[in-house]
Length: 308
Image (cartoon, rainbow, N blue to C red; front, side):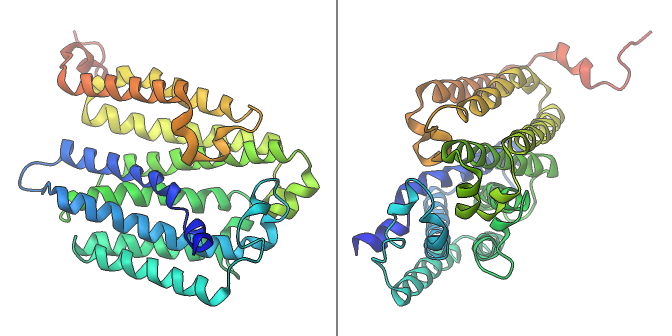
């Protein structure tokens, strides 16, 4: 039983905190008629997302076993060691998927459909013949779309009558692609041998350190551009926070070059004190700018910069 619990990666549930920005954005942007703030719904919605995520982790662990044996640390996973049986893995997958769907029924229809989308993405990412995780660039983009899905889940916990702005959806997606791209870069560097890396992850046969770094930089540009559009459009004061956001992205990519970088294990990032300090600083600045009006900044969004 211990091994079956381990492959569900309960310790990775912290990643589902990515639904919180969706909740916060909905509360900030919507009026009282459009939103419903229910703490019980938030708890149930978070649990539903955790259950669906664990279903995806279970199927991932089983289908990746033949490749994980080439990874320095993942070779010790229970499935690689032959300690679990297929019929119980399938039963565990169905159990977590069912729990996630049942919890979703308590929220609303759009939340349910979005959870199903998250479940389907797990199949597309892991199961042949599609198995997007084996395709260069698509591996990162298809996995990181789960970031955008989590933002939608947070949003739909609060409302089911409107959709969030496209700019923040794309920005959140590309932000997830940046995180995943830097994770790939850190993994590739840690393995240190292109041949072994290609056996562990098929997409690594076509990546190089340069393409991984370049693509991560591209995702970061796309993310900050779209998030910048969102911030300027909905509250111009937030533009002051952009340099701190750039600093956060820059520090994160530098972490990928550390030996045995924590970037490889996002669920362990809470131990990175400097990174957390940057995150909390950015949050504090955004919170302050939510309450502080700076009328002089509004001239930057005026189509006529010089008035005569």
